[in-house]
Length: 358
Image (cartoon, rainbow, N blue to C red; front, side, top):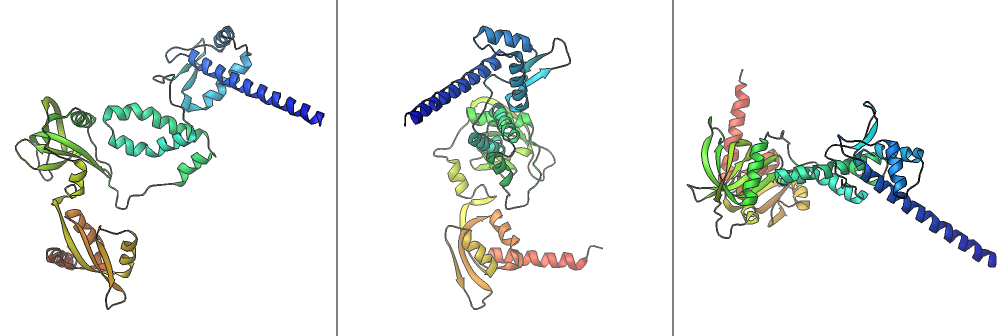
């Protein structure tokens, strides 16, 4: 019994000594990194050894070299080595702050997965400030191949439910000016090329919000000479000047309400329609799992292969495109305007295919 107690005391002391040693090593590495200058400066291994010894960390040069090599391999820490210009030495990458982000793996994964989305939603200057966090998070996960969090990044993928067009080119000056005017609530003078126009038109706009939808980004704004609010695609801005005049925002304007009313869907000012249609069983099963509207009902009809759909959906061009995309798996009954549009479109397709365009 006494022997067991002695063994326990010895093991406890060894454990404490190990923890103390590991903590001392961590402090030494932190101090060493703070001693390394940023590019264009550099410091020799011998000088690092001398300075660490002065600060109470008497380790061999060989130990320091081994530590530096391990940190160098972890590229996200920003350490680099000059082996071409004498005297050789170590330095931190240009612009790499001593407070560069080092995350726990869960946080690194969150930054890595959110980088694309955040970059599209942030003001241009802020997106650049966060770039080092995105880069560091990805590098940290990539450095630890085989780590569960690195594997998670490779096992999940977001695929949009529509054809993805190539991202339009948005001038960096335009993007910077747009985000600035929104943040500072300033009126802007712009040159904007409307769809189908050959030349851009000069307009004064009062910005109200920004909508990012797939690969399209639009500015919600009110034109000075008009009362209605409209969406302006950023890809069509040729020039933007932020003025000193404060933007005029309509009373009780809400971007969320503007979108919810259907205005961002190439719309008819937020109206909804009662859609009544015959749909195939496969489409009915899909809509049972993912309803197309808040008010939706599928019911059986005489033909077992078809169901009757009634739903309240936004009365806009996007909704009509969705109906067209179902092709022969839907027959619109109401509204009559949509039914006639589909019939006319079908007749045009038949004429085009029949003519052959030879």
